[in-house]
Image (cartoon, rainbow, N blue to C red; front, side, top):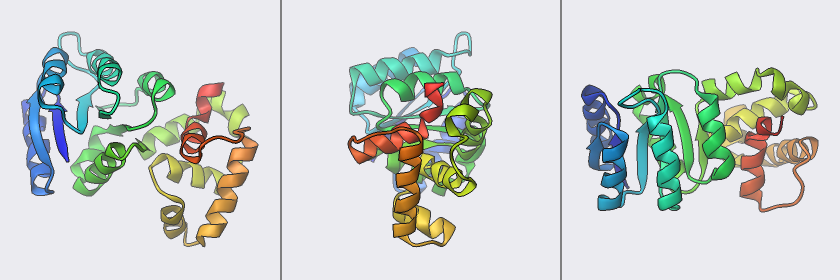
Length: 214
């Protein structure tokens, strides 16, 4: 896997480079700002771009804007956003328009190399990954309550694991239940969220992003 890293912190760029290199992932370039990131991606054609949401010069949403532009210019590029804090509106913009190959982790999570590598692999394969704390935040939103109040506690747990990128078999392992039981939970989630017949991977993403419908 070939990855580029965009973050204004040179220390974090180096730390991520070291972690990923030790894990067998090739870091083909780094950038300190959004403009450099855009040029870098065009030059080296990575599989995934790790992008800090807040970058120079204003440290507001330059990274998020760059990610949107990169997705438009390079549809096959995986995007893994990083943030120091919850930034749900940026997740909304990217995930609604193009959820495939998209991930969002809080920076505290990237110190666990297994979590980071797992997220990169999922995003590269076209899946969607969201930080558990982000999911917990979204599940607590008032606007989400009306949409998800039909779900049981176990169904909410299954939905959170889906959001973290787990397959049905993986969810079964986490909850110590049979895969067929997970499939039944997923079917009920789809029905309760009014997600009608569509390709399964798209329905799973739409279930994860059901809160956007409020």
